[in-house]
Length: 435
Image (cartoon, rainbow, N blue to C red):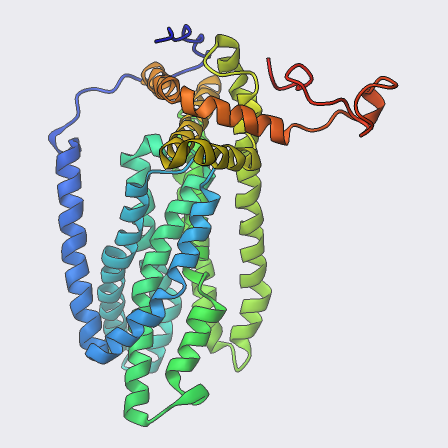
């Protein structure tokens, strides 16, 4: 077996403090057991509550209709996370937290607060309005943000930037919206059963149009603001403690404000909902979409900028930083591996790409003085994973680099050189990304 290259020199900068021995409550089995128990109990209770309010038939109808937008939303957030895919266990936890724990907290707290206000003011209609525009945004956004906070605190290695915050928040909010939609659609179906509504005039059709067709992204949009706050906090140096604490809080307050505006649009007259939708929701959706896509491109530039240090040390070939810094080249590499080595080879290439991306981000944080005390251990762990997968990954990445290498500009081609296409014929030595 080939001997691995020497490890590159660690970047200069602060790497944090050495952690002490974990307390008993910090042990993985304790945390996993507590979370699984909490989510299971929350799921059983929320299932009973929703079924009680909608009835069995209404619950099944609501469940079927509420499921429709979930795969599309989750696929969209997962697509944003393709540069450095986060562990599925984090995303599954975020979705389950939103669908079970956050939804249970919201139902109980909103009902209690609304009833208390109605009793105190003796005005049930104003209590419902106040509960929807003030109480619900605070309770629901705080409950959904708890999933982001837990991953930020206890899975810090997997939470490295804006995209991690946005994707985690998106999964949590999608789970919450899923449960809430079951309740609303099931209740609407029960109303139609009592009143005889059918067709386009039914309450179920109207609810489905507003919540599933027109605004399936509403809850994810609000909570993504909180996730972005946590993501920017993760990028801030440890010495800026005030900034690291205030940024998530600012994102949470923005999420609450947007949520309150959305809920309050129903009180703004006949066209208030559509006015808020057109003037605020659509532009905000476009702005956040641009932000996360721009962040993804920025992460790819980080990959191209940090990995050459490992190519110089011999861990990567000279072509790999270019191939790993392009989503198109990554896709071509996986397709090449699948054609020539089957699914195991494609999986090895995907794992190689993920490890290399994590390595680039780790070194970037180290150069900025934001790496943790386990920087060297984590770096060597990632390098070993790369080394074990190099046989399957290197030919595929080399092919991808060749396929996506930019052509030589015509002005750089000597007269009479090449095959008449305005650029030199491709050879290993003509590729500027190959050693």
